[in-house]
Figure 1 (cartoon, rainbow, N blue to C red):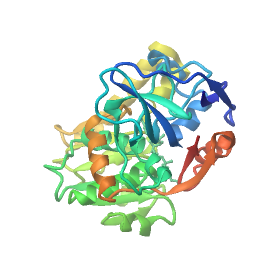
Figure 2 (figure 1 turned 90 degrees about the vertical axis):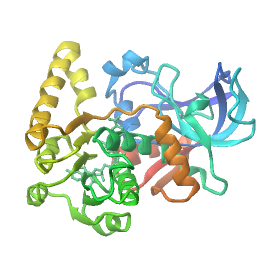
Figure 3 (figure 1 turned 180 degrees about the vertical axis):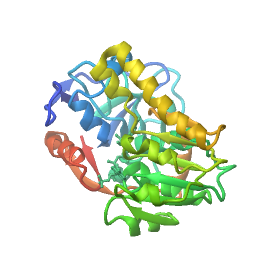
Length: 341
Ligand SMILES: NC(=O)c1ccc[n+]([C@@H]2O[C@H](COP(=O)([O-])OP(=O)(O)OC[C@H]3O[C@@H](n4cnc5c(N)ncnc54)[C@H](OP(=O)(O)O)[C@@H]3O)[C@@H](O)[C@H]2O)c1
């Protein structure tokens, strides 16, 4: 049998229950993984409260009861027809997309083999389980803002929310690409940001962005939609672009419905885009939305194999104690929470 963590109804705190269901069978190109570890990301804590229901219903992922979670580490247990990339028993890690089949907070998960990579021997399951979703989203933001390994060396990058999971991963990635990264981060985390690769690190505060120079090539917002315009005003006249993961897309559709939600998104996006274009007419502006990405997983697999990327783990717990993991993440406590099913 499979044990899955079910989010019963929209609620704060999350209304969670462990249920038993028959083992899922892998389809074509899929494998079934016996899960060792799966993480709780901020989106899980928010979705447990009902956030994102309207738009995610388009993917079949809006209706409760829900199984949440996008990250997994485990052992391949069964292969579907045409799945040839992994052997039964092999240790893997990777992603579950957001969709009607539910997430990774379970003892067994069926996943397309395209979203799995070999897990490096010796790396703890919890340490690996906190990486795929955050790294993929960060990677998509970096690429959407116009940066890639071929053009990154010497670029000035401004990261808002640098001490969070996406921020920490961006510092490690971008410093290795030769970028000069300015980090704006939580109180007390400046030294840590510098140790992770930031050239300069400042503590967050109302006036901080205004004090920075306005010559950045790239701006990444992993922290606060309210500061997206202020962030854009720091771009230089030859900037590549800005990307934000904290846009109001899901929230607007939840609150305003389809038509007004779409209009509010268009209005808000155009407002920031206008500032970005004012700074540099060719600069890009993107609202990043997570989706599984083969290139991001390849890059992550290379980096974990070389032990060149990591995130702190704050809490590990079983499915039965998942309440504490969701509370940990909802409260923004340091380090990710990991479920050991
Ligand atoms: N669009 C998508 O598909 C997608 C996917 C993944 C993540 N996200 C979102 O992207 C954001 C970052 O994700 P994450 O996993 O890195 O979250 P996280 O680990 O919770 O980190 C967020 C960080 O932002 C900091 N912060 C908040 N307001 C700030 C401000 N005004 N200035 C500077 N720092 C500030 C927080 O610091 P404090 O601790 O001081 O509050 C925290 O360190 C989250 O909001 C997440 O929900 C979106």
